Length: 390
Image (tube, rainbow, N blue to C red):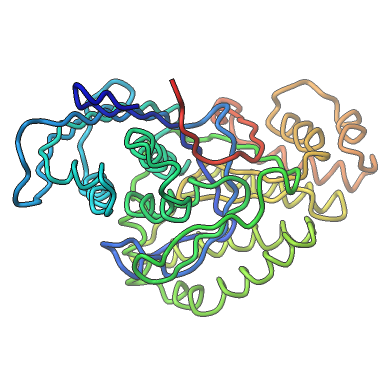
């Protein structure tokens, strides 16, 4: 929205989180945020978890003759003042570098910029909060400057990448790939829209605290010290990308789940192999992983995959026709209801025999305290970051 008399530009957008199926970890170029490998992710809906950002740009009467972009930028997150990072400034700098009349006008003027952001999820806990927030910021600026019909989505993913690497994937909906490329040729593209495959995602929150080692710091440590990570970059990722694309094309969930689980395991193994060792998981994470493997074993094929980003909170991925089975199984093993084991077997459609009873009972013996499982959030695939018109 533009008020030409007062020279005020206002835009607002809502950005989703995404969960990487093939992980991005490590940068080839720290400044431009060029990844060491391609990655594939699911963009989730914004019904529960999202960042909503409003940007207000006000022109002053002072000219920016030296193009130093010393604009006055303020940022609030959930009503509290926050630091304006170099990456946020880089996003504005990129917008003002375009050969577009409004961008050139703003680049030549000292600006007062206000960013008001609302997050509805735990920040820095492995829930892709930075991806959501930077994607929302990019679309809010796009809306403020009325560039939504001028800048293509591909260009917007490049800009979002400058704020947070994985933010380029949150710009788009459905199933996306971040293409490594080089320089400004590193971008995200949509492989399939959110209606292509009826997948569901359950986020099990076991920790809302800020992680001890940030993703940025962790990436550097792993890249510099892990021998296993070198093997991942040189061999594992390309193999997993090829296999996952085949599974996606064929909607082969059994093999899809295996690749997703293996890539998550390999990523966290590389973190543990770092020096000093980095552990983003905890005992609740281990319990969830064990539970998924037992459920898949009892069902005779993979009906659920798990994936952990740089945090202990679990993302479970499944086809929606199996959602009730996933819900019943985890409600039982977490003791969220008082279902008898015989009813559980009926609900999850497996045979009630002694071997299966023993498997479930052994798992329940390892169960963490119910209070340690803070929340369960269900998602479907979403449409990506959207401008909010008011």
